[in-house]
Image (cartoon, rainbow, N blue to C red; front, side, top):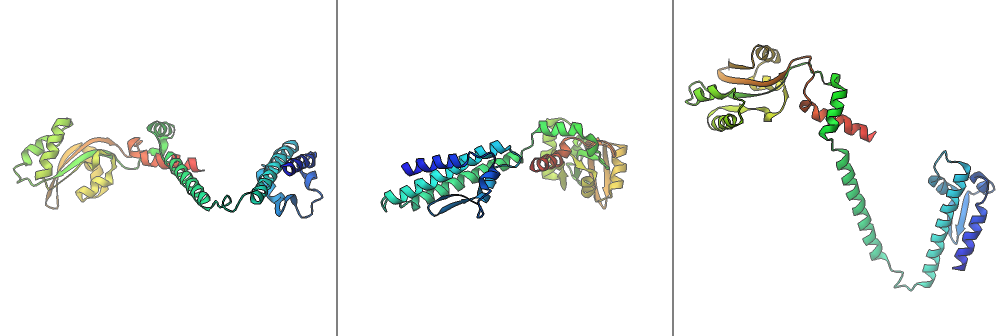
Length: 261
């Protein structure tokens, strides 16, 4: 251990130059320190000293790193010399340490990725309120429902009477009825959707749908032999700012992309 202490004292003395540049000025092969067969090169030292730090701080950081590096190498040499073959057999411990380290890093990465992809409603609301012009929609955005049912069905009269309901209780009864008797029912999952989604359900153009929903929020249509009951519960017109809920995915993508920059 005297060798270790002696070398550290020597390194401290060597590193007490005015600048790091002076420390290396006479080293043609860029070797900073040598311990046995181990060599610390200036390029390795440069990696641990950030750009822009003062000469004094550079010297201090260089001293600390060289001392730590030299001490580690000398301790390893001492261990190699004094430990028995059995004591030096660390393959299993190294493998276990490697496994634990990789597992820890992976778990840390997973947590970071999850955090990076979580956008709270408050964050989305704040961005939405500050950038509303980004959410002006060229088409109508709606929440509503569509029922396709034959007028000859015995369930047609009660469904026709209730397809415009906004009562949660009546809506539950309506859904139970249409699922068992109507040809088709959709409420778009209760989500806001563009008018193109309604156009696909009815098999007509977006322009025709825009004209229909501009006239009334509830109407019946006969299209290609099928009878439809359409109720638009909420709507934003073309050229208006679309709702926050409709833009949550878009806002999430924007905020997550910003975090990664």
